[in-house]
Structures are given as C-alpha cells and as structure tokens.
Length: 314
Image (cartoon, rainbow, N blue to C red; front, side, top):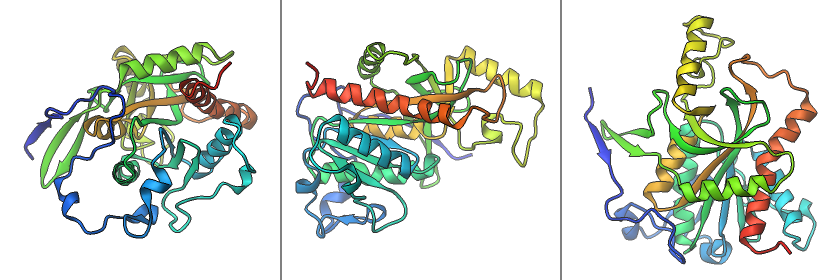
C-alpha cells in the first residue's frame, strides 16, 4: 500500500485577507520562461493576462459550457453592462476542453464532469489568477446534484466536502504516494451566502455536507447503471449512513475544488441545487421546465451575492 501523507498549508493563511493576491504553491513556476495554459489556449507570452483578467473578483465555475455561457449572459444583464449579451465571446474558443466568459469583474468557466476534469481546470485557473495579479478573489462552484433527504429544488451550500467514506479530505496520488489534503471551506462565506438566500423569495436553501464521488452510477449507489453490485436495501442503508453523517447532496467535484482552493488560500464555496431526492429514486422524471427553473436557482443566488458585494442594491 502506498504511504499516506497528510499535507498541511504550512504557515499560509487561509482566511480572507483584504487585498491579498492569489498565490500558487509551486516554486518551479518562477524559473519558467513561459507558462502555457494549454487547456485555456492562453499563455504568459502570447497574452497580457494582467490586462485581460486583473480586475476579476468573482469566479464562478460549473460543469456545462452552455450553462456557464448562460450564467455569463445572465450576469451581464444583472450588472447592467453595456452591449448585447450575444456578443460575449468564449475566451477559450481555441480549445474544446473548457469555456470561459468574462463579464465585468466576474469570470464564468466550465469545468466538465468529475474530479480529473475540474482538477486540470483549477490548476490553470489558479495560475491564470496568479499571473494576472488578481486580489480578493472569491471562487464558487455552482451546479446540480442529487439530494439526500431533501425536496428537489433545494439549494445546498456546502459546509464540508466529504469523500465516499464521509471524511472531509481529498486524496491525491503524487509520485506513488497518497497525499491527503483538507477540504475545509470558508464558513463565513457559506453563512454570507445563506443570508443572501433568505433575501430571495422561494429559494429553499440549507447548509450541509456534500459528498463527492468518482463515479455517477455505482459510486453514488445508483441502481440504474450498466453495472450494479448491490441491492436496493444496501443502497438505502448507505444513504441513511450518509444522511446521519450530515451529507445533504452528492456530486462529483467538490473535494478537489475545496482542497485546491484552500491550499492556495482562496476563499471558496460550493452551491448546488438538488434535482431529486436519492431516497426516492435514481432517475429524474421532473418536467424539463421545472428542472430549468431549479438549475437557475444557484445562478440567482450568485447574482444576489455578487451585486450585494459590489454595493449595487439601493
């Protein structure tokens, strides 16, 4: 068995510090003549990253490219920016891996599905913010999830991102060793988001643990995949244990998101809407228009939060 190492953040502060620039945890970057952000189709020599992104204060990431484009267009309208929303360009149009849109101080980026995909995106995003000399940046993952004992449409603000054993940690294999990183998220930011949710009508919102799995089917205890190695009773027992451990929703990206943001000192949160209660079934039968409204709930919360932070309310 590979050795397990618990990685701390050393002397780095992980609380929010006014005017703190984004930093990286890689001493090798300083000796590189050029840093190519391959999956973004950006680079430190080919682009003036500070001019392009230096004013970014909010980064919202989500799985779907189309959804993050829609969010960017929504924020363009919400912030009252000049121009047509159809003119918003995909900054990563030169690659088919991710989509990126900038609207004022807000960056909207897709991350694909699962830990490996969002991990690649986060490495390049954090380096992008670092090279752009951004400061006071808040990162929030918005998306969809399966609920655990919640009514469909409930928005879950993550308290702790936990793995399939309900542990608040993320394991990364590095050079044949298992590195364990904490998935602690910013509690003050979570409470700030919850307060914003109370100010929006018809937005049921809770704070709870989010379980991150490496698979959509068996890994989440679904009975409807091509493979299934357990019974209905075993599935329900596992979900009961998860609920007892404080888990209120299940998705596939939160642990690495929380771990990477924390170790780089970035203030971060995870906000996902539940599309179904996993105690009641595995497949979504909700009408499309209702699902569309559910998916817009995290976006509405983000808009309220960002506008409040920017002092745009009367």
